[in-house]
Length: 129
Image (cartoon, rainbow, N blue to C red; front, top):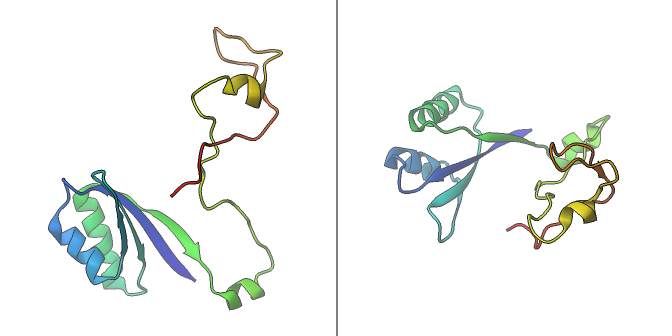
């Protein structure tokens, strides 16, 4: 099993030492036209790597989202599986009449927002990048 970390940071406000660490350890760095950068890095099994990674995260006031990556042989040996979507983009679009489309509004209170009962899956405009 490997642990992959996802880190999001502002490229205009990040220490070059952190960028160097990511590049030196073969991080997959994804940039676009915004100032936000997403980096994926696979954790090394070395104590020094972990200490340095955590020190840099603390210094930059960042956190990472860790994800377990299993090999095919580990998955074949597993007694149980959990299946979940990679992306959690299933939220209603804040436009049109999504409340009436997604929810049963029979017992809905417009003052407090309580009483909705979901009747359909949430939708998004396009697939996440």
